[in-house]
Structures are given as structure tokens and as C-alpha cells.
Image (cartoon, rainbow, N blue to C red):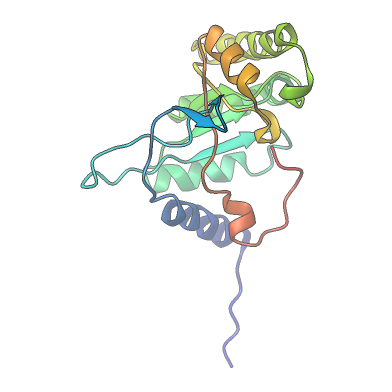
Length: 190
């Protein structure tokens, strides 16, 4: 009988490689879809590229701790992988050094709201305020104003997508939920 020991580093590498493999899916464009006679404004799930062009878009949502951030940077640097981190303003406040490290390592730092609310349960004004405050925090550290937004919990509707468009942001949604796919217990989605 063989016993396999998976260290934290090996586990993270396995997760990263699994995410890469699972993410080799086609990528489509942001569209407006007719559903039962009403138009639904959808976020971008994927972007179409020629079938011969193999592209993976990896992203992480940062709304909790940062204990694995340095290790993620090392692993991604080792394999020359660049990704997008959707960060919450509160996370930026708690871990500005991690935001700087990620940015300096060449990863995109984008907006995941300031306080991680259910966006469909707040006013359009509050939605815009959430995004503006987080943008300001990210720009203060990275020098770059985010243009992408991922709604906390994947919670969006027409008003969220439109409000983000009005603030100059493309709303981005995931199309593969890797942590759930590989069976890893995980924190509250978002």
C-alpha cells in the first residue's frame, strides 16, 4: 500500500493546476439575453477567442485572510501565471502590503466592493459608493483604477450590471467554481 502525503505547498499547487485545467473552457462576450420577453443584462462570464488560442483566465476573490497570499505569489511566479484578484476594500485596509505584493508581481487588482454586501439588496447609489470607495483604496496602493467588478456572492441583477457600467466597470462572473469542484470545504462564497 502506498501512502501519499500532500503538503500545504503541494496542495496549493494541485489546486492551481486543477483550476488551470478546469478553466480551459471557451470564453464568450458580455451579452443581453432575452428571457420570457424581458431583457436580462448579464455580466461577462467568458470572452470568445479563436479555438487555436489556448487562454485561461484565473481569478481569486480576496475578502478574508491573507495567510496564503505569499505562497500563491511564489507558485504563480514559478509557473509564470498572471491572474486577477478581486479585492474587497476592507481587505485592502487590512492587508495593503499584500495588495502591493500582488500588484508588484504583475497581477491585476480589481474591485469586489468595499464592504462585501449583497449588491441586489442595496440602492443604486450605495452600489456606486461601494465601488468608488474600493477603487480609491486600490488606486492609492497600485496607482491603477480598476475597470472590472465582481459582485460579492455572485449576486447581481440588471441594476447591478447597469450601475457598474455607469461607473466605468465591466461586471465579471466566474464560469467554473474551482473550490466546490475539487471538493474543498470553503468559506462563505464570494
